[in-house]
Length: 133
Image (tube, rainbow, N blue to C red; front, side, top):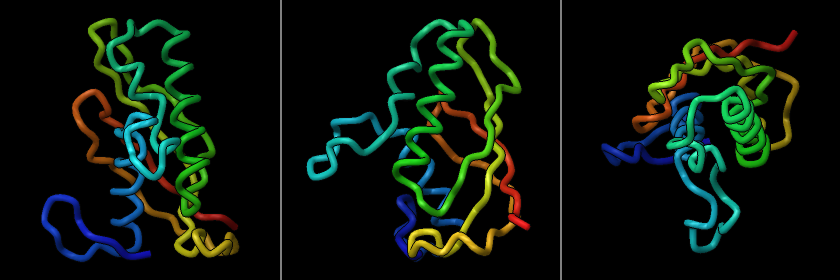
């Protein structure tokens, strides 16, 4: 899949496009896109909440739901917090599979690559993407 880098305007393809797409999904509140009202992630509503276990679980669920619904090229297998402090800073790791042709319904060949999402402050997310057998 191809697109445009939101910061430079240059062409963006493949895995780099996936990373930007996931970052956009997770940083967009629902009901803010005119023709895609449901687009985005409810995780944005949890940014200013206390870092309790319930809120952290809600965040992981919102992250998983949004990726599953809006990004067919990535299958999230698990997510966990590497750091979660009461100061509001947290780092979440994600393991999953990147399917370069997932947007076409082709889930046969997965690609192993690392992932580091450049999300806005409040979303320092890192993780890795693993291949399918």
